[in-house]
Amino acid sequence: MARAIVLVCDSLGVGELPDAKDFGDEGSNTLGHVLESQHPKLPNLTRLGLLHTLPKPASDERPQSAFGRMAEVSAGKDTTTGHWEMMGLIVKDPFRTYPHGFPKEVIAEYERRIGRKTLGNKPASGTVILDELGEEHMRTGFPIVYTSADSVFQVAAHEEVIPIQELWKICAIARELMRGENNVGRIIARPFVGTGRGHFKRTANRKDFSVRPTGETVVERAHKSGKQVIGLGKIADIFDRVGIDKEIRTESNSDGMRKTIDLVKESNADFVFTNLVDFDSKYGHRNDAPGYARALETFDQELGELLKALRKDDLLFITADHGCDPTDVSTDHTREYVPFLIAGPHVSQARDLGTRRTFADLGATICEHLGISGKGFPGKSALSELQ
Image 1: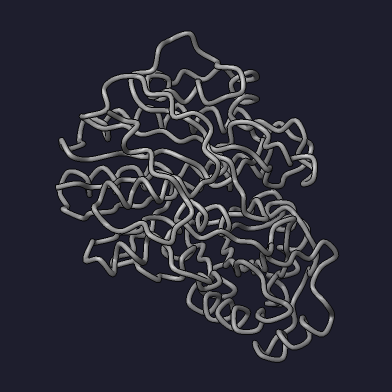
Image 2: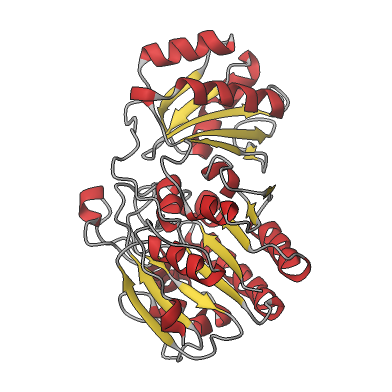
């Protein structure tokens, strides 16, 4: 039985795209710069060809699997856009961003709907704004609203001030509000704990409230074709649960890998789709190159166990949704190529898949592998190139 397992190493870009300058990302290279500055040991990823996806290969070791890189054609560099494109849905019009905060009338209406005032309303780093406004939030009970260079409306609240379920409720209200001309890609609940400035820490109870996909995706078609689709991490949130048969929340990269490995060993699910967000949220956005390198080394070790668990007809895909170069001066996503690695028991020799025109080649390959129609999707399958 053919199965597809997809690991999205959130933000693991492999070099600037030709239009990176238009996004303010000229010179970005998430993986390359982490390798240059930190020198992590990545034996499994090296064998799979990851280091050969960079503009200049960072290893002389010949890969033992299929490797390439994919370009993004959608108008954006955010999580939603990247995941939708890899599943065959091109985003032609970028989601709206708010570089100066949200309009006063929007915040006023939001406050009216949730029955309380808010703090913030500006672009900010998630950890910085907690230090700035966390104590005031604890005194007043007012949630912290902020955005970033991406199309996001983020709501932060201390778990002992606004309980998780209540935070999710006021984020659902924001999702209803932020539509039409004020549409944003995601509303993100950002719960945190801690006693005061310098001691606040975000928890794993994050939840994303995404826009419903504007067209059919490979996820939805697989579901409609009778395939069981399991989304781990924030996958279900990204696709607004359309086409997801089962959602499994994760607390960290390692938790996501453990749960993915368990599914591969014990489940007969046709399509296992996992997002590993720590690379992005804990290290990319925080400009923490050493932390990024350590996370890659841990992932590499866990990957070894996953590779051993694959069955004979399984294909494992490893990719990313955008970049977030931790050595960059900004803390925002970067417009980059992403890896396109394919591994499995039947993929035992080096196969250079080259530079793919679109992230959608991943979805097209999954369609052919699972035996479902790829008609209408923009990507080109790489399955025949694995022979």
